Length: 377
Image (cartoon, rainbow, N blue to C red; front, side):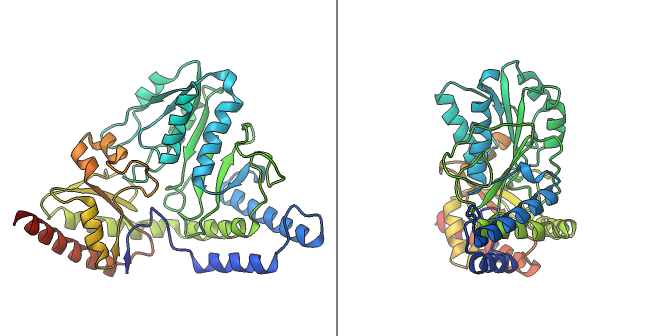
């Protein structure tokens, strides 16, 4: 099997799985219980929370565990605008956001919020001048993704956050789900930061929202004692402990991991450039882990299924998208609706080998030739 869909989900690191299994069997108590077993689980939860905080350079009290990045994004966006509804109902975001942000914005439109989309440049980066021009007295939130999940475009969120400090009433949220573990992250100028375990070789079902101490949120899940007042529900200490382990492991040797993926990306790009009828949608400044392309004359689903017959797995677009007809991100950057309709995503990992890429490229070229020949018959 050749797995090239790491941006959708990553395989669980065996050390992470071992951590989860150990906690499940040796820490059976509810962390909210007052007896000895509960206290034991509580101390583990506290230690795991501190580890996540230390790794990201934030306070332990600023870590809120969720069921994943989608919940974290919802809590950040809905929770902040409801808490600070007296500040205004104007929100700025981009069309490059994950569906859990985009659809949340659509919900807020229905209840009276005004959503404005900042322009992006040819390379996908936020047009900083346009962002400045869109800020108003009633702007309550700016939400910008750090790494786009379909193209891999990197946004300079620290530059944006530094500028937004001039407007103390504006809250700055960043979806960092595709950034953590791929590139170094700094949360110095960010108020709210979302990410997930299953994107960093951890288990599915747990994520986190970093909420700086000067920010308040209106909870969107109510009832029951938890790890924090901002998110009710029994703490899943086994998942949280494994999440902390996954974060620690994915950040180790991050530079050498990045360089390995970059070399693989460059190999693919170089090979694709020799093939006709292929457009590379991911700008050069994207993370090398994500490479988005469009194929002339071949439906993306056709190529996906053809590769699957050879035990090679890619994706047509982000796995969480609700709109299956086209990629909004590709359309926003390329301004080409045909590219947006025919895009496929190849996503890499430090686990990906040169041999896997060589095999993928060989099979990919053979399939393109065969599919186009078949279509021309």
